[in-house]
Image (cartoon, rainbow, N blue to C red):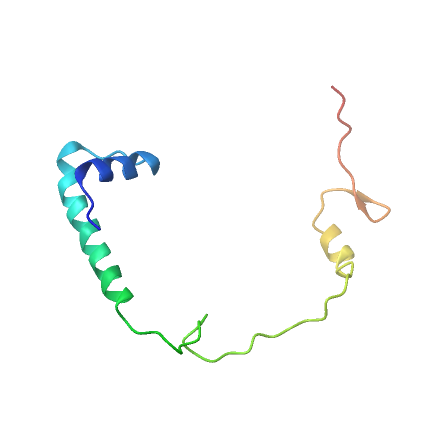
Length: 95
């Protein structure tokens, strides 16, 4: 696949990036270089290789899936400028 100046201008427009006319040619060359590397990666034989999320074998910790209130009400309300009866209080708003 090859990227020309018109395609680079379209990509820049979609990304909302201002690109001057004289910058299109170098950007097209860079994008073509990147696409060349991607084409090289597609030539690698990956048959029998499982998808990975990390290069290190790691088991993620699991927690119990239960609903709690967090148990931090008093600590959270301590940061509030004003509270009453265990709730935040805010000024009355009337439009």
